[in-house]
Length: 114
Image 1 (cartoon, helix red, strand yellow):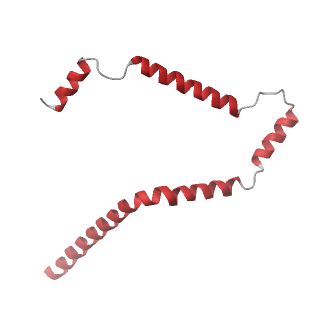
Image 2: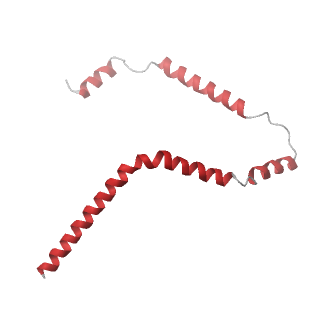
């Protein structure tokens, strides 16, 4: 019996994730999101336009925000992305080198044939 037929047999037997487990997971995720949001947001107070403007100016005038963002991005790229991409980049360089070598061989042959 092939793998495809075995998959159909399992689906026909009703195997899989129980609906109760899916509902319980969704409820738990919703509860966690609610608790996190409640913990991070303070209650909204009636603010005057001056207070709103002052709060907005404080957020905008953070001079080091751009520097911290650049540092965090650089750290992420250097620590996580580059080590993962190194083998891909090396293969790409090898492929390009092969294409260039083949092109030069064809050019040399064409010049010899003239």
